Image (cartoon, rainbow, N blue to C red; front, side):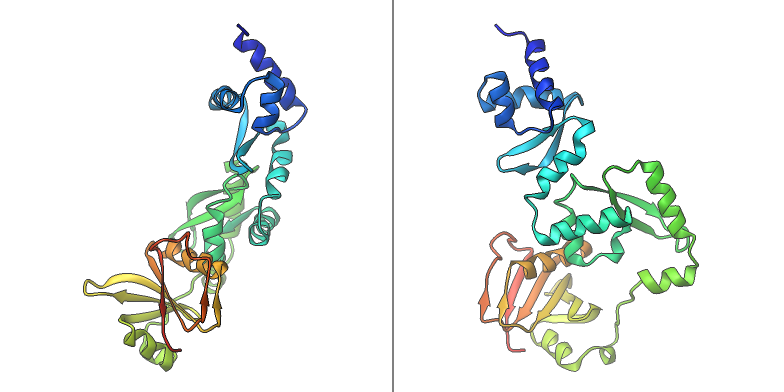
Length: 263
């Protein structure tokens, strides 16, 4: 029977050549993929081997720390244009306050934990807790120094660029949108972005996000964007629309609800 140390040596020899998928490792140690994954995941659990969370096909990418960038380059092939754009933004800025991201970007970031991490910190100027996304290769000390440097900006400037107050009065809302929301059962609308509202809904006054979309087709990217609002405000989201065609909503369950109406 082959010694586990011999198997380990074969795995490490393969990974020293660069990142590998489970099938490549299975070929190297001459075992089936299920056995190989069990063995490799054991060493990954001990921290001796790294593995990605996202998969390339049906396999994580296994790698040594020195080859992290190569492993991420392999994963980049699995990403869509929106995901790649967000990764580029994080890499360029190193640390980004999530308040500066769109709701869709905040939602997308949840599936990009191989490329970025999130940390919470207190804003030195406002005293409020803020969430930051940072590039995966940065140490927490570096992240902290970057955040502190950002916080040293004048308080008024921070207020103007990062804090958006909802427009709460009916007079500040487009009358047609206001009437549409009331007509469809949403009360006390407060506009948080153009065409997007926080409302009370139902007999118990449940908080909900409502997005009004006046367009012919609702596609998957619209559901991703709506899901982002729900994630940001920790509640369900509704889309009010007059769209003739609706597609791409099968993966969002009851978290994004569509109400067809005249707009």
